[in-house]
Figure 1 (cartoon, rainbow, N blue to C red):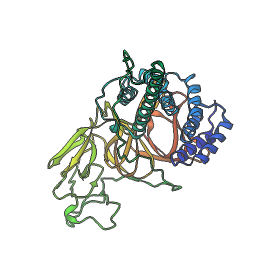
Figure 2: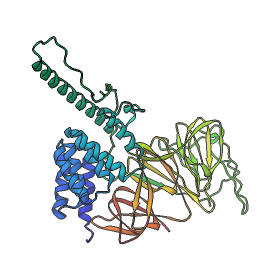
Figure 3: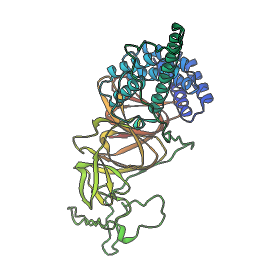
Figure 4: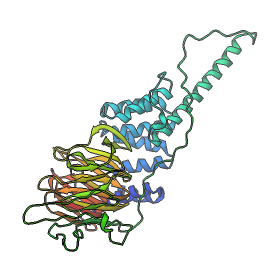
Length: 446
């Protein structure tokens, strides 16, 4: 099938409008997309999400069942169908679909935890280890809904049994026989105050993303005692960094000699050759790139993240090591791997997708998720970012920034792909080629 850039753009716009809860416009966009490609699976999936958001759970469930006829091994479809079934009150059908989702994705720990809570809420098991309030908001609300449905069902059943018993005995004071067995009654769940998480979509027509790249050829003038121009000033300050907060380095002859002073650092500074930053309020960084650190800080190994929850797989790379989360009052200094250099992105609520192995540091206040870009023979791990903050990559060659033309698409070998920013649809096409369309920029390496 030939590429239809307009169709891809309509899907992207419909998804964006769905996130913004503009369901009317989202459905109008997806209807236009389906008029171009009737029955296209991605469009049907988005339409199902729109119907679900509108409260048409039966219509959404019908679409998911239709998609499962073609993609019966897709765990996400089984999970979404289960959620619609729970909303409709078809608890046992939903439970079966959750079971199917786990069979398709047996390593998904979040699904397994959710299934245990579903079983407990339905009265199928007598105990559960984790508090359901620790689940993501949508799953937690589903557990409450299942529990309430189960409780009402038990109350109706008990009411009917009582009526039957009263009609079977002439004396209403006579005690009815005790039933041989009864399903366990789930413990009551209390509704806790929870702030629902919701993705923030920027309304700017051209979301800003600043790409900062520095060259080490400009050296410090020792007579002036100031750092080189490879320093980066914080966004919220137009004034130069005070001298005592700067990092100075001298490169005499052909050998690199860097004079680093991590004391009193309260702002970020970096060049192609090093990165120094305070660890408060928190950063993610690669353990193999740590040159040194000052003072104490806490470290945890970062794991693959999906739907805001950590999975079992640690994010790691042979060259840069594991991604670790650091929180504390100290200072960290990173150096790039041999024959590599640092480069920085500064995002402002713009969706940013970067090859996982290239990400070496980012601020912990950013929202991020793990994902995959799949071809016929390869599965490329990606990290997506949203929010406001800084992200650092390391490269061994030049970085190319290509704006995606309107109503057209770009093709690039997967090996060349670094990532993309903006509202872009990227997918594998024609073997190992990545096809990108939409509104944004594509980042490639040489």
